[in-house]
Length: 80
Ligand SMILES: [Zn+2]
Image 1: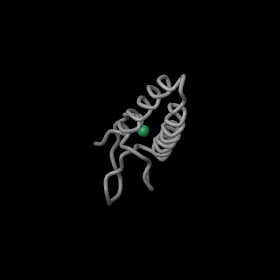
Image 2: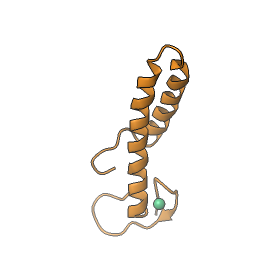
Image 3: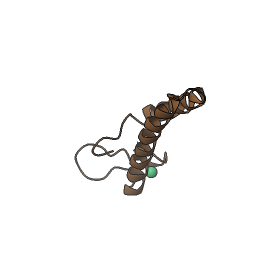
Image 4: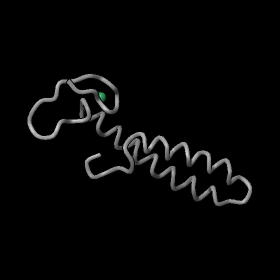
């Protein structure tokens, strides 16, 4: 029994090869999409953080996004 890395549902892996991390294609795609979104957010927030006045606000947002991205396992890879 495995636990889905996206929705947390338990599921029984079927087939051979490496064990799947997700219960369904939908969850795999959703997780991948979330990583892509966060990766883009980190870049955008870090650019905004270079501003003189509101930089600190954006720096905090960039840190939050990066923390969540790292919790998801880092930058999106080829198979998410
Ligand atoms: Zn799932």
